Image (cartoon, rainbow, N blue to C red; front, side, top):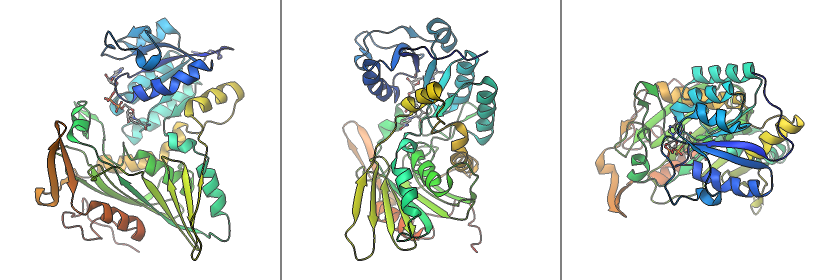
Length: 392
Ligand SMILES: NC(=O)c1ccc[n+]([C@@H]2O[C@H](COP(=O)([O-])OP(=O)(O)OC[C@H]3O[C@@H](n4cnc5c(N)ncnc54)[C@H](O)[C@@H]3O)[C@@H](O)[C@H]2O)c1
């Protein structure tokens, strides 16, 4: 089917996946609808909105429980898919078959083979697909690339990542796929590094090598404190195709949530990038740290600009290849190991179970500083998920 050209006025847009992160999209769409950029023509979800649901200020909208029908009836030109990971590829195919462009939430797909299928389906359709790694819309990334080209900063020697967030058992109880590696025979891969901290991995790769290459020697160490199948406390080291090490250490069992940070180790300086805040700080020896905050391009604005003016997309599926190799390594790694109860604090608060792992915040900090994994740092609960490869 030939893609329809975008209409002159507001772009008709369909939101699929209403009750989770779809709510944040509804809130973000409101000013865009008020500006006349888009027109929300319907929402689609197996579970209908409640009778008093004003859809975050959009008011009553046509509701569909079936995507085929929603696309037929609304004639949406752009479809925003905010559904569980294992539904991304099948729903994306349906959207493309109806001739609609796509903004697809991250992670792109649940396997590397599925990324290939999606890339081919998008190419064959002649339609556009933007993947929802919103941190890749930050102009901080270009700023960092310019800094790295500067001789007072020097060559990039490695990137550490620290992510310490607090997610209670309620987070995992909100949906059947939450905290699962597989569900009903399908890969889900809802682990800490592949979902909540996916932006950390994708942003590190975007800085290190553009994110479009397969990394080498991916070493995942996956653990869980919550009684879940997937990992909630993990470390993963890889080397980019140019040989730069990237070591991300994260937990969803921190005492409190802090902004996640990328730590760039350079020849003559250190750069920290709080990627959720678009905030970059340069630390030069003997000088006061220098912080700058940067603009972010919204991925839907970018998709519409691409369709109207031919500007290259910020995050086409190909830009997520490096990240999806990491997801594949996590998917095919042995199952995460439980962190024994004696290394945790567990308490009930506000009707749900909270957990922290003893010493996890300093451990994660040391991992980023030393580019070392949990087992190398001697965490008492950490034994390798897979035998560590000999290091050169
Ligand atoms: N970019 C980000 O920062 C960010 C943040 C949170 C979640 N996400 C991504 O958004 C997606 C959804 O995550 P979530 O946490 O909102 O999940 P969720 O399970 O909380 O909500 C998913 C919604 O999709 C609906 N749904 C399920 N199957 C469907 C189908 N076949 N057709 C239509 N609707 C369907 C569910 O009923 C539910 O309303 C995931 O890919 C997740 O990784 C991205």
